[in-house]
Length: 105
Image (cartoon, rainbow, N blue to C red; front, side):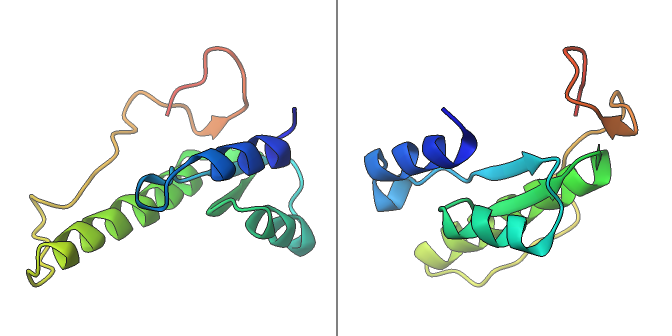
């Protein structure tokens, strides 16, 4: 099963309110590869070789979006101080994520 088939299966079984965020991590880096990923139901796209900052940015888009949605659902004004902003520690990760067994984010 490839990533497109997996995404289709996940989307067909998940409820709208609990849809997982799916980020493509692929060696294909052309604009139509990104388009195909998004069209298949993936939420974001990171091409290899992925630098930790690329993955961090994709995750932060998700975390920020979820934080804003939760705030909106609670009828509160969005406010993110430096202390309350979601973060991703990359202190132990390597510069590139090569897909190897020992890769860390």
